[in-house]
Image 1 (cartoon, rainbow, N blue to C red):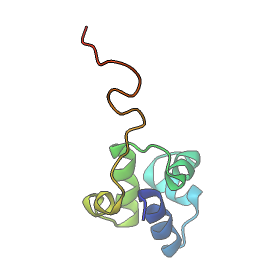
Image 2: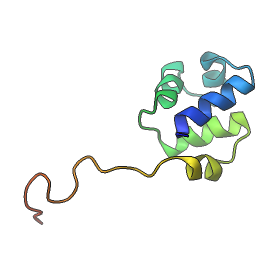
Image 3: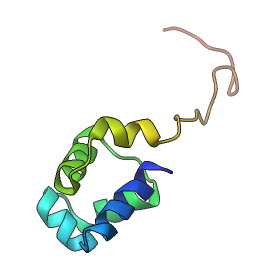
Amino acid sequence: MSIGQQIREARDERGLTQTELAAQAGVSRPTVARVELGVAISVATLSRLADVLGMEVSLVRAKGRPARRNNPIGSSGPLTFD
């Protein structure tokens, strides 16, 4: 289960709307929506949402998938150092 799915599930279990969660966490409603859709999330935002939802950040992160590289080294040309 992705981090976004875990956040949404926890929000639903607590009967919170995205707007209510956003207000309690000090973030915008569109930020909550992006998190739930799996768009990039900062550690600070994750921590705020997890605190409001009573979740352990380490547990939320442990259940997520490992990050995938979009451009592995060497896929877009030679690796150079300036």
